[in-house]
Image (cartoon, rainbow, N blue to C red):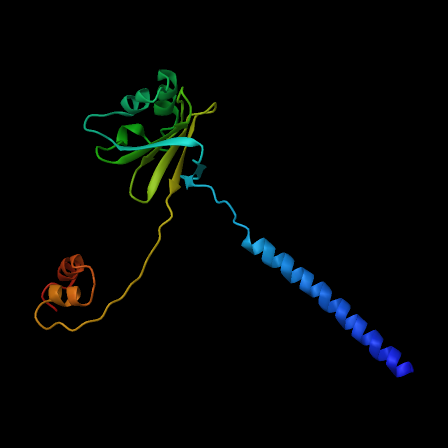
Length: 181
């Protein structure tokens, strides 16, 4: 009689513990299926509800020419030119470099940020809100490594095309290795 009680008590305990762990795993699965919203970030700014305009610096165009088009006051432009020189000197803005103006998304569009790309990997971001300041930033660089193999029978270009590689890679390789291949 005692052994029956002990066995039934052990079975009841095992059922109770298994029910508790089943509940936890179902809660974990429910959390994993929910989609988490990731905001679109540009230069570290959430641009979901903002207007983003990408353009390039035109010939003989200055910072004032660019910012006046987007409704930035002269005194703000003057402040940027004078007091953010230690971060980036606006006189070094070059023809052809890309820039981005981020503004409010309403009928009276007001520029909030101005980003100028100094190099393909670095930029300066001007905050045009109440306190005007500039900060330097680096873009995230994604390195993708791929490999391909083949045998050069007639030409390097033909071998790369046969291996489904980018044919422009032949030009790059010929510049690197010249007459050694």
